[in-house]
Amino acid sequence: MRGTITLSHTHKAKLRFARMLFVTLSAALTLAAHVASQEQSAMQATPFTLKALDGNEYSLQHLLDNKTTVIVFWATWGKDSGRVLGDMEELFQKYGGKGLAVVGVCVEQRTIDDSARKRINDSIRQQQITYPILLDNNLETFWSYRIVAVPTICIIDKNNRITYQLAGYPIVGRGELLRIITEAFEGPAFVVSRKTTAHEPNRGALVTYTMARREFARRKTAIAQSHAIKAVSQDSLFALPLALLSEISLEEGHLPEAEQLLKKAGQLDSTSIEIVRTRAFLLARQGVFEDATRILGRLLESDSSQAKVRAYLAYAIGMKGNLEAALRHFGFAQRQDSLSYVI
Image (cartoon, rainbow, N blue to C red; front, side, top):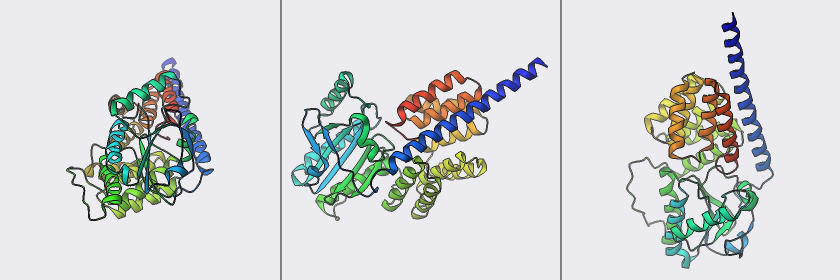
């Protein structure tokens, strides 16, 4: 009898944890949506004036005097930030004299103290970056641009319109980004030679998927789902929209549908972090906590900045009964939330 009571209490504790986790996630998403709703249209670049590491101030209005402006939101802890900074430096050296402006907006942390400043300085010295590096104290610019991943790259034209935005620096979007910048100065006939085995989605599907991911982060699930379905129709070989549809189904509790969508996504791309983490979350929702914990743990070992991976790991650990470790992971994910990924 006593053993039955203990099991009942453990089960109730798990259920309380699950409810608390998803209520807290919903609250964070509601706050993010509220902040984002106060900003301008996604097609218009929000004005900003920020100080650079050397103390000089730079405004977006001043940068728009150039033909094309590239803003890189980055941090020393962002997995691909160093690669982005280096790639943009190469383009800046090549086209800076022809009208290309590049600025790096560092979102290292809310308040840039001496320790953070040293990390930032060491990083740009190592990369030999010559374009301005701006400090986003309090992350106001980060929020105003509705950034959902670090790094994120925005291309802005002379009319203050965001013509392209790439969240993260995935292989499927990297070539498209470099092509757009290159063609702005070399002309549409110029082709960037690039060897890759990954599927390169068409531009329309990539833009639609980015919109879907942004709306999902703002908790506008119906809009996100609509955009993701459209992205699939634009490019049936693009796996990430299918993974997002699976993630949406998971969070709505439709496990069979989520599993079917994820299977299709996995047939197209089995290594993308979005697909792997969603597969692990599906396992956790199915009660296969050990496998889910192992997969999510490996993802964090390769990139500890993935807040959503950590939140899913917190769920899996908590449902296994280790509430103390789960809350520790979830607390860390929340601290990462405003810096890396809106969950």
